Image (cartoon, rainbow, N blue to C red):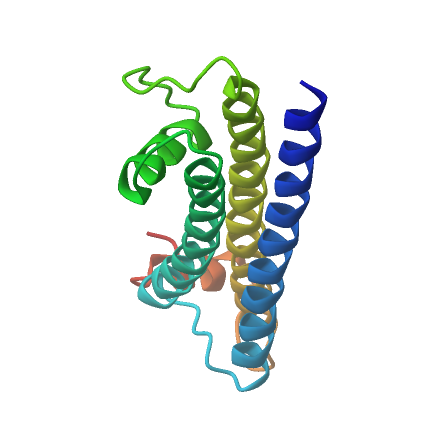
Length: 170
Protein backbone atom coordinates (compact mmCIF):
# COMPACT_ATOMS: atom_id res chain seq x y z
CA UNK A 1 0.00 0.00 0.00
CA UNK A 2 2.78 2.45 0.87
CA UNK A 3 4.49 1.80 -2.48
CA UNK A 4 1.22 2.52 -4.32
CA UNK A 5 0.71 5.73 -2.32
CA UNK A 6 4.24 6.87 -3.13
CA UNK A 7 3.93 5.98 -6.83
CA UNK A 8 0.45 7.51 -7.07
CA UNK A 9 1.51 10.65 -5.19
CA UNK A 10 4.49 11.12 -7.49
CA UNK A 11 2.34 10.71 -10.61
CA UNK A 12 -0.22 13.14 -9.18
CA UNK A 13 2.51 15.75 -8.66
CA UNK A 14 3.74 15.24 -12.22
CA UNK A 15 0.14 15.63 -13.44
CA UNK A 16 -0.20 18.88 -11.49
CA UNK A 17 3.00 20.14 -13.12
CA UNK A 18 1.62 19.18 -16.55
CA UNK A 19 -1.66 20.96 -15.76
CA UNK A 20 0.24 24.07 -14.64
CA UNK A 21 2.29 23.99 -17.83
CA UNK A 22 -0.80 23.83 -20.05
CA UNK A 23 -2.60 26.52 -18.02
CA UNK A 24 0.49 28.73 -18.22
CA UNK A 25 0.75 28.23 -21.98
CA UNK A 26 -2.95 29.03 -22.36
CA UNK A 27 -2.76 32.19 -20.28
CA UNK A 28 0.39 33.30 -22.10
CA UNK A 29 -1.30 32.89 -25.47
CA UNK A 30 -4.41 34.74 -24.28
CA UNK A 31 -2.26 37.60 -22.98
CA UNK A 32 -0.43 37.81 -26.30
CA UNK A 33 -3.71 37.80 -28.25
CA UNK A 34 -5.13 40.53 -26.02
CA UNK A 35 -2.00 42.68 -26.35
CA UNK A 36 -2.21 42.38 -30.13
CA UNK A 37 -5.95 43.18 -29.93
CA UNK A 38 -6.86 39.92 -31.61
CA UNK A 39 -9.58 39.02 -29.10
CA UNK A 40 -12.91 40.28 -30.41
CA UNK A 41 -16.00 40.78 -28.30
CA UNK A 42 -18.44 38.90 -30.47
CA UNK A 43 -20.20 35.59 -30.07
CA UNK A 44 -17.89 33.89 -32.58
CA UNK A 45 -14.80 35.52 -31.10
CA UNK A 46 -15.77 34.30 -27.64
CA UNK A 47 -16.61 30.86 -29.00
CA UNK A 48 -13.23 30.59 -30.74
CA UNK A 49 -11.39 31.58 -27.56
CA UNK A 50 -13.33 29.07 -25.45
CA UNK A 51 -12.82 26.31 -28.03
CA UNK A 52 -9.09 27.05 -28.13
CA UNK A 53 -8.79 27.12 -24.32
CA UNK A 54 -10.80 23.92 -23.97
CA UNK A 55 -8.73 22.18 -26.66
CA UNK A 56 -5.44 23.10 -25.01
CA UNK A 57 -6.63 22.04 -21.58
CA UNK A 58 -8.10 18.82 -22.97
CA UNK A 59 -4.73 18.08 -24.57
CA UNK A 60 -3.12 18.55 -21.16
CA UNK A 61 -5.62 16.17 -19.58
CA UNK A 62 -4.96 13.59 -22.30
CA UNK A 63 -1.22 13.84 -21.61
CA UNK A 64 -1.94 13.14 -17.95
CA UNK A 65 -4.20 10.21 -18.83
CA UNK A 66 -1.42 8.86 -21.06
CA UNK A 67 1.02 9.12 -18.17
CA UNK A 68 -1.25 7.03 -15.95
CA UNK A 69 -1.81 4.53 -18.78
CA UNK A 70 1.94 4.22 -19.34
CA UNK A 71 2.42 3.60 -15.62
CA UNK A 72 -0.20 0.83 -15.66
CA UNK A 73 1.47 -0.86 -18.65
CA UNK A 74 4.89 -0.53 -17.00
CA UNK A 75 3.53 -2.09 -13.79
CA UNK A 76 2.05 -4.96 -15.80
CA UNK A 77 -1.61 -4.15 -15.10
CA UNK A 78 -2.50 -4.12 -18.80
CA UNK A 79 -0.77 -5.84 -21.68
CA UNK A 80 -1.17 -2.99 -24.16
CA UNK A 81 -1.29 0.78 -24.08
CA UNK A 82 -4.69 0.97 -25.79
CA UNK A 83 -6.42 -0.96 -23.00
CA UNK A 84 -4.52 0.97 -20.34
CA UNK A 85 -5.45 4.28 -21.99
CA UNK A 86 -9.14 3.32 -22.13
CA UNK A 87 -9.03 2.30 -18.46
CA UNK A 88 -7.31 5.56 -17.56
CA UNK A 89 -9.88 7.69 -19.40
CA UNK A 90 -12.64 5.90 -17.48
CA UNK A 91 -10.78 6.35 -14.17
CA UNK A 92 -9.56 9.93 -14.73
CA UNK A 93 -13.04 11.08 -15.68
CA UNK A 94 -14.46 9.14 -12.70
CA UNK A 95 -16.89 7.40 -15.05
CA UNK A 96 -15.92 4.04 -13.60
CA UNK A 97 -17.60 1.53 -15.91
CA UNK A 98 -16.06 -1.38 -14.07
CA UNK A 99 -15.56 -3.42 -17.23
CA UNK A 100 -11.81 -3.43 -16.60
CA UNK A 101 -10.68 -3.99 -13.03
CA UNK A 102 -7.13 -3.61 -11.78
CA UNK A 103 -5.45 -6.28 -9.68
CA UNK A 104 -5.92 -6.03 -5.94
CA UNK A 105 -2.20 -5.26 -5.65
CA UNK A 106 -2.55 -2.01 -7.68
CA UNK A 107 -6.22 -1.01 -7.36
CA UNK A 108 -5.34 1.86 -5.02
CA UNK A 109 -3.61 3.48 -8.00
CA UNK A 110 -6.93 3.48 -9.87
CA UNK A 111 -8.56 5.38 -7.00
CA UNK A 112 -5.68 7.85 -6.90
CA UNK A 113 -6.03 8.39 -10.64
CA UNK A 114 -9.74 9.14 -10.17
CA UNK A 115 -8.93 11.60 -7.38
CA UNK A 116 -6.31 13.19 -9.60
CA UNK A 117 -8.80 13.43 -12.47
CA UNK A 118 -11.41 15.17 -10.31
CA UNK A 119 -8.84 17.76 -9.25
CA UNK A 120 -7.43 18.34 -12.73
CA UNK A 121 -10.84 18.52 -14.42
CA UNK A 122 -11.89 20.96 -11.69
CA UNK A 123 -8.87 23.13 -12.49
CA UNK A 124 -9.73 22.91 -16.19
CA UNK A 125 -13.30 23.98 -15.52
CA UNK A 126 -12.18 26.89 -13.36
CA UNK A 127 -9.89 28.12 -16.14
CA UNK A 128 -12.73 28.02 -18.67
CA UNK A 129 -14.94 29.92 -16.23
CA UNK A 130 -12.22 32.51 -15.56
CA UNK A 131 -11.69 33.11 -19.29
CA UNK A 132 -15.43 33.43 -19.92
CA UNK A 133 -15.83 35.71 -16.91
CA UNK A 134 -13.01 37.98 -18.12
CA UNK A 135 -14.53 38.19 -21.60
CA UNK A 136 -17.89 39.11 -20.07
CA UNK A 137 -16.27 41.81 -17.92
CA UNK A 138 -14.49 43.24 -20.96
CA UNK A 139 -17.73 43.21 -22.98
CA UNK A 140 -19.63 45.02 -20.24
CA UNK A 141 -16.82 47.56 -19.79
CA UNK A 142 -16.75 48.30 -23.51
CA UNK A 143 -20.53 48.79 -23.55
CA UNK A 144 -20.36 51.15 -20.56
CA UNK A 145 -17.61 53.13 -22.28
CA UNK A 146 -19.73 53.35 -25.40
CA UNK A 147 -22.69 54.60 -23.36
CA UNK A 148 -20.70 57.44 -21.79
CA UNK A 149 -18.89 58.71 -24.91
CA UNK A 150 -19.33 62.44 -25.68
CA UNK A 151 -22.13 63.06 -28.13
CA UNK A 152 -23.97 59.94 -27.08
CA UNK A 153 -27.10 59.78 -25.00
CA UNK A 154 -26.18 58.89 -21.47
CA UNK A 155 -28.95 56.36 -21.04
CA UNK A 156 -29.25 52.67 -20.71
CA UNK A 157 -30.76 52.62 -24.22
CA UNK A 158 -27.25 52.81 -25.71
CA UNK A 159 -26.09 49.80 -23.72
CA UNK A 160 -29.33 47.95 -24.49
CA UNK A 161 -28.87 48.56 -28.23
CA UNK A 162 -25.29 47.27 -27.98
CA UNK A 163 -26.55 44.17 -26.17
CA UNK A 164 -29.00 43.52 -28.98
CA UNK A 165 -26.17 43.27 -31.53
CA UNK A 166 -25.43 39.72 -32.66
CA UNK A 167 -22.64 38.19 -30.67
CA UNK A 168 -22.84 40.39 -27.60
CA UNK A 169 -25.99 39.70 -25.67
CA UNK A 170 -27.24 36.64 -27.49
